[in-house]
Image 1 (cartoon, rainbow, N blue to C red):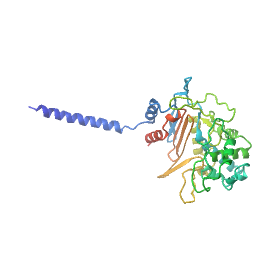
Image 2: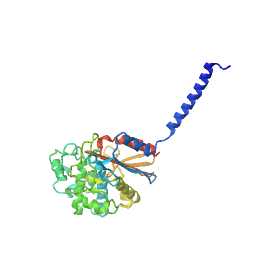
Image 3: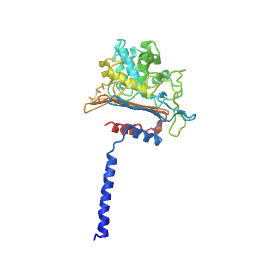
Image 4: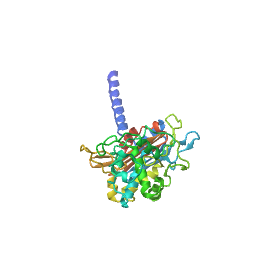
Length: 349
């Protein structure tokens, strides 16, 4: 006759083993990009559009929430959102196009290209502007105001007492440098920054939902910016070069594919976008021309994030394995970009 305690213990161990294997099975199941995105949306951490490509194939292309929380107008894949510093990639491509035409050199000194620059800018090169080694002070967080223009930033730079450091000795992110690049594009092309990008990048790539936000610009059905509490925090400045572009995840993916395929730039010019400078102390900076660069085990990542007012943006590109992650949101500080990127990357392994 089986003792009741022995009977209980026998089945207790069996049930325990079954629970253990069930739990192990659940843990072993890898999350999909859909799982991650839906979790962020359900938890109120994402309102916007996302495109993910794995090995050159789109696996996610979707949009969630509202472009206008007050009117409850839906946010779709065609809704333009402000991309903030992702605009720097476009500025770098624009400069590279001008260089390819022989109208400019990366080693040109900027005082020869623009009048009315502060005297302390003497000797700074185009490439130092592009890779943030110029020493020019960053205006952002010090000068932001509604209607701010590139001219306002140049006027502010005249009021500064000099560079933050000797050009080429350090990396220090500077939105001001990219505003100067926009002015150089305009001086050489005799077009506005927006006209140059539209003619040479947006139209050739059929980026039909991408616009530079210039004075009197009209962007139909664009997203309005909000904070995590759904209070309006909209984009309201007019600087270009460092930012100023509204776009969609789909349009940004067209840029990604064009750069991979050599559709916009030659192979040599494209490779220069991802080349990082050696600083004076011998260390290697981690910023190329319009992109933060990571290199590890033969894999090169070109990426950028952006954020201003109620907008946040992410553009992550695995150049070896043809993986791309693009996320744009108009509920800015609700979106934890770094956590989201890490969670999505884990699904692509």
